[in-house]
Amino acid sequence: MRPVSLDFPKEDEEIHGGTCTFLVTTHPAAAEVELSVNQGPWQPCVPDEGCWFFGSTGLAPGRHLARARMRTRDGCVMTTLPRRFRVV
Image (tube, rainbow, N blue to C red; front, side, top):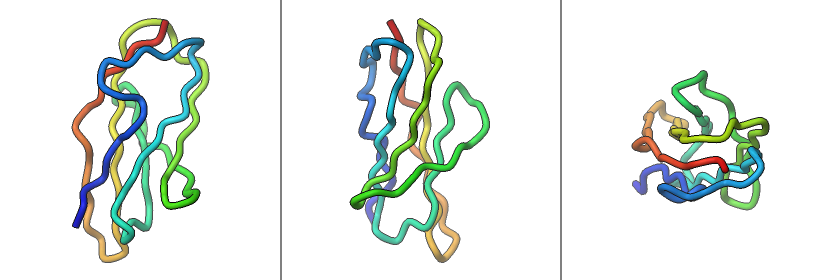
């Protein structure tokens, strides 16, 4: 099974303006995908065209961390490593 992958933003990518749409890809068996920014609460992502998206606004300038996790229909949970990005 292919693990969950946080595809955007890339590691150490600069985001301009404090608004970001995170892109997560998963194995087709994913039933639920969530995203956490700066170790905050897990927020649900929205499925669309085989990917999952999470929109975030109001990110303060500076360094941030994001993680994605998926849960399959049979209860398996997979989580990405932290992804660092920067808001300018």
